[in-house]
Length: 173
Length: 421
Image (cartoon, one colour):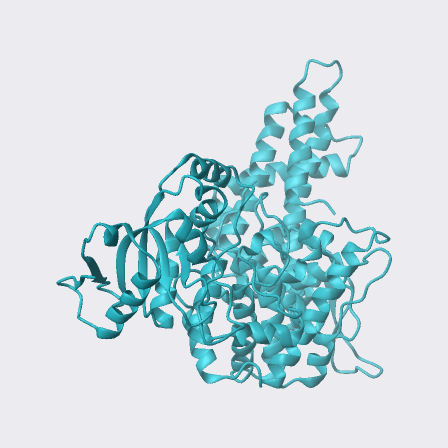
């Protein structure tokens, strides 16, 4: 499994390739963008796994449902009738996971986080990344080297934001 | 013979007699010129000594390089470090001695309680004496000595420590000396009892250069066993896996570790069967790890760090702490004492190679892997690893298992820094 550092490293290398004089090297911007997003996903998912690995009694069921990305289901038949159980997959949005981590760890007020430039940059990054991963004929995508450079930086800053709030310390890239 | 006590020295007839005996045995430069012999007394420990000059041929015969801290115990620890006779500095010293070099401030103790033919027990200047013995007799120059008399064990240790402070002596050597002085040979005998030493084996001069358990590590093992046991009494069984534990490293060097000292006063480590059993089980793990890595048929690289994985401080203290913690949880203790499973992919029980490659997201790029250092972080993680292992009978310490244990450690620590439910 790759670490967030490796994803960032690969993203950086792709960007370097895109910036080279080689003809038709612009396409490197696509993996650079996707890889820098994966860096955040890797960091966030692993952090959720750290919490999910703890004794089941540590968290309420709805929190475990969030951590494990499993559906919380009320059982109305069979042996477990009348109980809530975790079943099947229920994927969460990356931004929800980030909010969960920051708020649960007693970190900064989320309203403040959402109002900051960094979060706006994150949203712009998300829009481009989504359109690359889920392409449509009618949707024009325009990416430039400076934009991707900014995405890599945003990825690092988001990771640092989470680290500071949850671990109360900074990571080194 | 004119023996005079310095104004700072309290007159002592027994000391005077001892000095007289020595001066009957050997003629000093001072005596040959009818000069008085001054007896000094150290202001800190009260040790008596004289300063004098001896001929190389006398020094070569009278000096003993195997000085003992405890003169009543024949099995007393060898106090001095090994001589480095192939070292360039020593070789120069020996060639200088042949050429007529006069050495000074050699520290010896006049003691006839053992090996009476060599009553000058050398505490400082072993290499110089060796150089005199091997090369200085022909030119037969005078060499400067400080000769101590009637030292008790504590004074002797102090002399040995002071004599070695200005040269490169490892903390492991200091630890060995202090251990001997304060606690006798209990720790060494404990190491023998559980299997770490065979016959007359002893703690090494420098742990990093040897493949043996050091005084510091043996002390740490013992302290952590009792710390774990104590902690166990403070938490319920349900909370056993909800804590991050902090195994302890005993301090090393010229001062004795407080925790260790207190525990040694309270417990007889040779008679505590639970502790002895824990030691034996840990030695089994070390032995199997060592042999598995050394076996040319296995795929693990035969590196010292992998062979001696069980001697790494974080591994040793983490394991020992958990052994103490689980004393009242017999099923988990039995699991803990079980050697981790192996197979062709993981031939050594501690899976040293994979451990050394392990990294968590939280770790800086320079992190050297799990159980490779003595840092608190590593000790916490290793104790969590062994605690998690104790929950099941047969476990491979594979990467998945390491991930789980370290995740738990990181998760619990993060929660402890603030969690809003």
